[in-house]
Image (tube, rainbow, N blue to C red; front, side, top):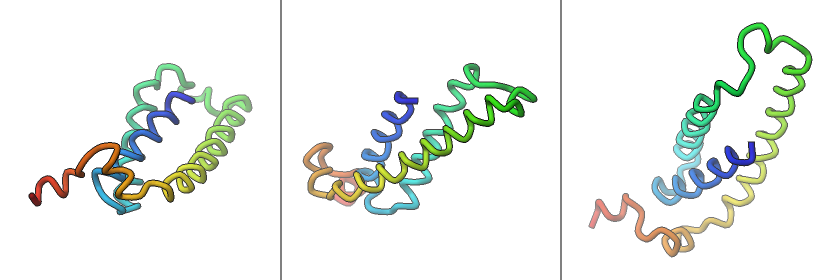
Length: 100
């Protein structure tokens, strides 16, 4: 999970830089990347009727809670990502390079 959160934060910052301040665009891209990571690790997760067992239900609740807390933290961190700071880290965003 820690590895997935690390990737999510990186993709969030890079998508903020690449796509500007469009929250919806960043959320879509981040969700797409997170789903890709989840599919990549699918063999490590329960399948079929195993999910209905109480242990897996608790696992699902824990994942939902963790994801909700993560999104709160990402939102707070997002407020610190100014365009100037992102440009300092990554250079000009693709949108500005294309316009040049």
